[in-house]
Image (tube, rainbow, N blue to C red; front, side, top):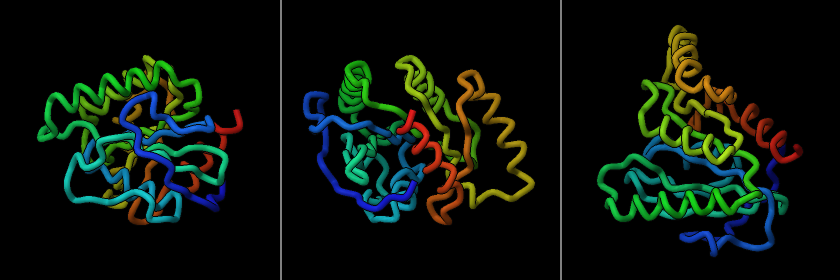
Length: 193
């Protein structure tokens, strides 16, 4: 897949605000400060997602139209303790409603930190996506920080943690572009099936 155009469309706080026309959707999820915005910018080759050092900055679904053919969705980071409980609970309800009413989502990219053990919040998000039967790719981000000798045991650990769902796992880096081709290929495949 070659990304030629990226257009910001809308910030969506409630399912009824989803933009028209209805196009296929690929959504990116990840814990706060996992490098989601940096990875999105690397994948698209554009400075589309605002990169912030403040965790929990994104509080809505940000819709971007890609190549006039599908929406790429930047979802709020989860797992940041300082986000108000009411806000977190509202986000979970809205996400559940969005996934329940959404037959256009063809792929979720779950971005995790490759440097640390699978986190409970990541596994909960994986369960959530599985419950709603969303095809998912695990992007083990910040792989540029790993030594080559660490990769095989980390991949084994990730396969043990996420293997139940038989989802593909790719090492990625928003900083170096590692994994970009693999992720774009998975996105392209999801859009054509």
